[in-house]
Every structure is written in C-alpha cells, then in structure tokens.
Image (cartoon, rainbow over all chains, first blue to last red; front, side, top):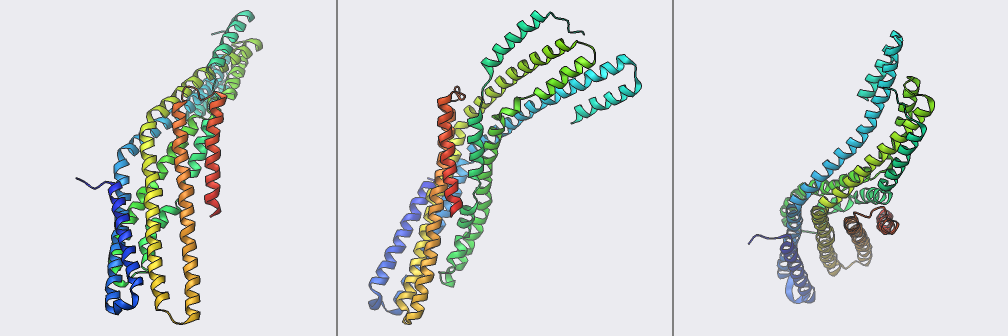
Length: 129
Length: 279
C-alpha cells in the first residue's frame, strides 16, 4: 500500500518521539554511559531526528501530489472567470466602436472628406483600443 | 434609421427597463471585498522559505557526519518550495478573478452609452429628447443584461470551484498547520539536544551564560514561527470557510444578511493578516 501524507506525518512524529526518548536517556545516564556510548547514542539521535525531518518532507510532497488534480480544476475555473471578465470588458469596447461608427455615418452623409477621415480614424482607434 | 417614437412610447420602454434593471441588479461588493482580502492574505511566503531552509539551519546543530543527508533534504525542499509558492499563487489568481468578476464597476457602461446618445443626436438621426431617451433605455438594458450575466457567471464559478477549492485549501492547511508545525517541532528538538549537550559539558560560567542567551534567542525565533503558522492557518481556514459560505449562499449573494456574514469572514482575514504582519 503506498505511503500517504498522513502516514508520513505520523511516522515523522514517531521518529521524533524516539529521538527525544533516546536523548532523555542519554542525559539521565550521562555519567554512567561514558564518552564513547554517549557519542554513539547522540549520533543515533541525530539520524533518527533526520529521518523524522525526511518524513516531513515526504508528507509535504505527498500532500502536494494528492491535491494536484484539484489544483488543475481550480486553475481551469480561474481561466474561465478571466475569460468572462474579458467578455464584459469587450462589451464596453463594442459600445465605443458603435459610438464612433455613428460619427462616421454622419460624416459620410455630410460628404465632408476631412470629417470622414477624422471619424474613420476614431472608429479604427475604438476598434483597436 | 431615424429613431422616431412618441414620448409616451419611450416612457413605456423606459419603465419596462427600470423594472428589468431593478430585478437583475445585484451588488456583489461583499464577494469582491472577500476575494480581494483573500488574495492579499494568502500571499505570505515566509513560512515556505523557513520550511525550505530548515535542513540548512539544522547543520548548525548536527555533527558533520549528518550533513550529506541534510543537503539531500535541502535539495528536495528547494523543489517543493516552488510548488508551494505556485499553490499559493493559484489561490491568489482564483480570488483575483472572482473579485474582478464581482466588481460592480465592471458592468457600468454609462459614459460610453452617454457618448453614443450624443453621437446619435449630433448625427441628426434623432432630436435631443429622443437621443436622451435612447441613452437612458440603452443604459438600463445593457446594465440589466450584463449584470444578470455577470451574476450568473459568479454563481457558476463558485459552484464549479467549491469542490476542488476545498481540496486544495485542505491540503494547504495540512501542510502549514501539521507539516510545518512538525518541522518546527523537529528544529526545537535539535536545538534542545545541541544546547543541552553543550550546557551539560560546559564548565565556564560566562560561557554558559552566553549559551543560555543564544538558546533563548533561538527559542524565540521558533516561537515566532509557531505564531506565524497559527495565524496563517487561520487565514487559510477562513478563506476556505468563506468560500464555502459563498457556495451555500450563491443564489442570495446580494441579500443584506448574507453580505454581513461574508463581511465577518473578510474582517477575520484582515485580523489574521495583521497578526502575521506584526511578527
């Protein structure tokens, strides 16, 4: 059965508790242990504590992996929402183009080349804004 | 085409549009504020950096024989750091998008429509009264239709995201509260072993006093990290609970009592963010 993030976290706590227990024993029997045994125990304590730290790393990695499919769905929903925002902004742009087009129509009716050019530019600007 | 209509006709259309606009108009200000506050609050990278840096800090305390293992963990955590920050960014981006969709000014086209009315008048397609009526009716129609469309989009966004959003937030809460909490607990054990051993072996009173001060300083740093973990967990849990409230109330988001409830989540987020900023 594969390791889950919860399993890794539980193992991390077990390793930490074991490292603390050995440390407590080392301090409680400081003189009786002698230098060599103290050093041996201390090294074991660090190895077990690092195993605990490794299990924390595994727990984080597994929690990220386990939630990846959901994260992709949230990412997709975010893209849809931004598309909707863009659509609403585009409505504003359409109105701007319509406004400019009315001015162009009036200029064409008046047969004024200067006004036609000016209003044609306004339509272009509105459409490309 | 000339816009010839009797004044009475325009009035009838205008009244109809007022009814349409009133029925469709919805202020989503509370949703926007919650989304914007969530987006700001979730951007806190300090804890992720502290987690990634733990193996390097443990080297202070551990014998050289353990360093290769700590280096390996540091490399693994550096890769996770990017993924964790991207996960926070995902929540931020989602909340930004929700906030933008809920922004009231998004569906205000008044200026453009006024300009359209003026253009119609200037083009002699309509007289002054007709142009004004044209603007008023257009404004109401466009607002009502787009506002209704926007509200539907907000509801559908919240509806489709709620499930995966809770999974992502749940995973982040576990990582921050439990995993980062365990990481601090491990560092505290390392600190106790290191200073405990030195203090046990030490004979010089001045040296022992200095050691005690250093130990106290390091313990203070770990306490601060514990507090930050607590406050950031509150931020994440409040964002998750607030989103769930939005989901539960998605069809009544403009009701005053629902707005008030969403506001309480926003205030709680601000308080937790302030607590983090004080650290």
